[in-house]
Image (cartoon, rainbow, N blue to C red; front, side):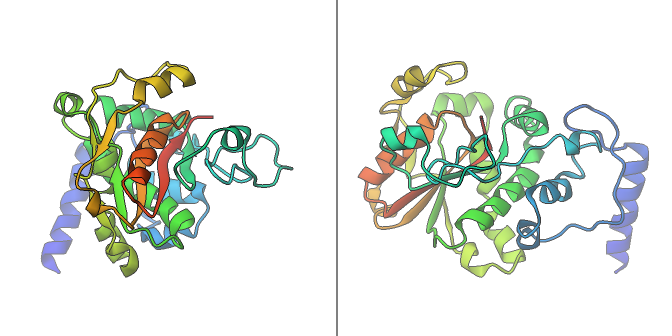
Length: 277
């Protein structure tokens, strides 16, 4: 009890001397002492906007925390693309009708704009690896909302080529899911705690040029045959969730799904933190 009180006093003193700054704009963050941290399961039952505010309250100021747009229905029942008209019902979008997809369906937490865009840039390109934990919790709440009935066996991140991994120092997508079993355990979701987090089976064998700025056809050509599956027995007959940071055209996750499907996965699903619209 004394040790816990001392730790709390230490945090209060640290916050007074070095007030936390917003990860997006740098403004000081006013500490919220009234709202406690909720479990991921309880957060998943809130609206995405409320969940985002609770998860990111120690990372964003009161202005930036409101600059968030969730991906809401109606949307494509396969790729998750949101439809512009709220009068639409969920159905396949034109691209999913005309192009074969190897993933069963894809979902995302937020639209790739505002604070989510800026958080991801800070996380990926300025070494703010401390953001992996809250962003990982945000991802897990979306996992509960959309995949809780899927009985997913394995979650794996879109891999980086070894050269880019050495350059950046970490795989941003993998860091976000590494603690999922512990998050699930704390939330009382023991069925999710048994999901295997696999960082070895899917590998990137081509050091492709960045997809940023490329149109769809060039993205597809650029990423073709970039991935391979090592030891297919690890995923054969298993339901696999592919996790990435951003879904833009879907060419990267589709190529991952293609090789996983050919290696014998029972089903491939996709979850991303953000969705470009």
